[in-house]
Image (cartoon, rainbow, N blue to C red; front, side):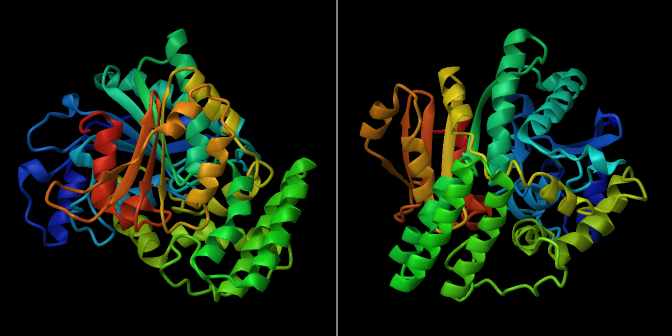
Amino acid sequence: MWPLRAATGLSLLLLAAGVVLRQSQEPDELWGYVQVRSKAHMFWWLYYANNPTKDFTELPLILWLQGGPGASGCGFGNFEEIGPLDKEMKPRNTTWLQAASILFVDNPVGTGFSYVDDCSLFAKNLTTVVSDMMVFLGKFFTCRTEFQTIPFYIFSESYGGKMAAGIALELQQAVQKGTIKCNFMGTALGDSWISPLDSVLSWGPYLYSTSLLDDNGLAEVTAVAKEIMDAINKNQYVLATELWGKAEGVIEENTDNVNFYNIMTKEVPEMKSNEQENLHLIGLYQRHVKNMHKDSLNELMNGPIRKKLKIIPDSVKWGGQSRDVFENMAEDFMKPVIGIVDQLLAANVNVTVYNGQLDLIVDTMGQEAWIRKLKWPNLGQFNQQRWKALYVSPESTETAAFHKAYENFAFFWILKAGHMVPSDQGEMALKMVRMVTQQQH
């Protein structure tokens, strides 16, 4: 479904929230469904860039991919991180629409407002996730010809980074073959689940170095991390995912429930599920997907937003199939995609890695560990670069990030940010977007 531009819904929401509108504040939007397979429907939401001095044709297009798998970009990424409005319907000062048009997609199918009519159709691996997105992107660029020549980037967060790597490689090949017409310029992997094992192995040392584990706690976390490593080495990926859930439990017990998304904020533990089937998987889902369906966002998406969109089927509830999405990907969850990043670099695709200093689930130490494993011939030269301190503005004296780049690879160390970098450090995230998309150095 490809509706005409529809800014009226946003106007009504803003007016209802008592916001005085100026025409220039109001981004044009589009949304719709694409059937990516028979009985598998993907929801997307596009906002045209909203910059006071530049038309959207002068700015790039960014596809945003959320994590989970099963967390909604159209919901969480949009209203909690980078969209024009926050979940209170107030304008966001650090929206990425100042620097780009944004395309949110609820993927894999079953996420957010996306849905499947048949439970056998949930994606079970990265291959299916990628092929579904290729169908979507093919239809998008065919129908929205105004974006075919505009620089196109894929930005991502968490498990979205793993999906972004696979999608970027497939898209690069499709563009070269001429099967998809777009100006693909690169991908940015934010706090990304590229190498689950490297993340897990770094949890103990990271928590120990920040005084959140003692010697006994470090020994316990190290022991369970070794169990996960053994399972992965034997290709027992479902077991590795279950043990990953166990490892998080061990960490919570030893750290008085540290917040996996930001070690400086307190996590209030959720009630444990009474169900006896795979408790570790249920715990993982509750911590990493349900966590992004908090009541206020859930009420917004299933209330005012659903009314505004007008095309959501009665049988579809936002987030209603998210647990199925997560559980169907259990075998794929702990598989690394370092090799895909190597292929991207070899194909001369621009790859950016960015990570929040206070993130635990995908801590920076773990990111640096998998980067050391790259077979990219220029890795030595990248490592020899001195990193540069970044500030949110010329007037600021506080270091907001460090940055290092060589050829087509870049890394941003974002200070005082957790797993959701744009939520924690919105100004620095926006500056990073401008740097990655070559609007600022």
